[in-house]
Image 1 (cartoon, rainbow, N blue to C red):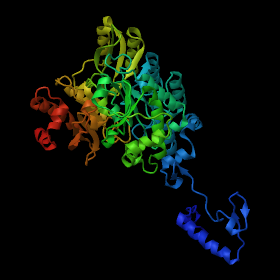
Image 2: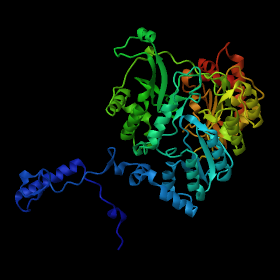
Image 3: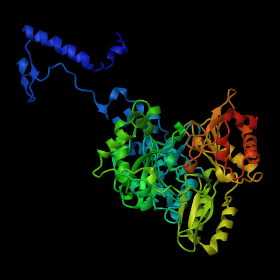
Image 4: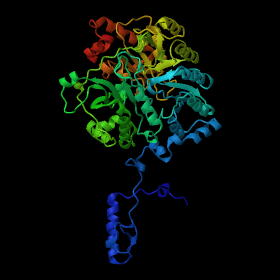
Length: 599
């Protein structure tokens, strides 16, 4: 005889009201004398006297929880993490490599914690995402990654919008060799995916920008190594981003991060202009911004906190732990820091952070700090004088971040032969080669041009960034990189811009390319007939142009995008006021007016 499966299921635990009812009922039974009483004394021993018992013998044990969330309420990813920490997947990785086998859903999730992504159905292969702390790497590491891409991968690599590298087309049999090769280069991919802290970014010109307030690399790297050496920094409710801004000329897009540290200067003059009850010595500090997540149309906001640079890693760790303990573990769409802040407000979050710190969190009105100097839009391109006399950094434009092994080797050779073997990646999908002597600048520029890259700002190509797109991501609704390259091919030589414009292509609402923060943003959308298309937004910006783009059109065919971009830019050039930037022009008009201009 078969038994209904619902009768075999484990019973749900009693609710508090059910427990209370049953305990009261049984107390009456015991009082009647028909059943001998057995209870638990405060000492933990058994007692036969009802009045001496601290609890009845029917109470079910409390259900196990994860930071207060019952196991039964956890989403599947949280239950997988509870059953076995994804950091402990080495034997699973060895087994998959030995069997040359792709993972099931559970192991696919677990392997993301090691930076390995099985990206089917877009590609029947693995992708690895690396950590490049502070966006700084060596020429030797670049050579090594080029060899990995050529020998194990698909013969190409991408610079990402978090200032690191992704390399694709790895077979399961190679994943252990891949991970150990990466580690031999002094790099890691641990925590680069799943519910972890992503690559810790920093202003890419830190340490040589003449206008910077602070070299922020030590703090970004300090947090990176703290994460690697503390297991509880993994397994968060969802991913988490941290960035450090040096206050200089190039944007690190820190206001799009969960935590953004902005270097600021406090002087006697600024303190006198905005008196505060808190005594603050003049100097360089970090202001702390929280809650950036542009896919949800939110930028990080100033909290009022002013901390010493030496405190930044501890503050980060405390805030991450508060998020880990209180973030949503049942609904992954509401599991980012933004939603804790929306529910609690900044004051409660800061108060919970303070409980984890042995030093006091300082406060100072924003007006008591010098204003941040405006960033140089597209300042990540071209030649810039360094703070070190006679040396220059050269920003190299890499169309949509894609590099071949040959190009990677060539860049590494330039950094070694003309610089000091350093390379800086940026969140704008390009790179800087620093420490180039004046006498070699033109030689390096010519070499960059010969390898198919560019160094000049002011072109269409300078501001185009794109996420992986449908060729490499199952979530993307459009081939973003191909469409972005098509824009460059058709318009770069045709149009010259008086002021820089950023054009962001992202394949889905997750906004890896931050379409809401671009002058012109495209987010992939499948059209009713199945064709690739985009919804179009206009007027977004970061830093001193901060603002969320507004939706201009829905359902534009991908084939129509180049003509639309051209019309937008020609209309802007013809109708703008003298000296007016694209952001200023687009925000000066209503969406209805802009639509009328363009239809």
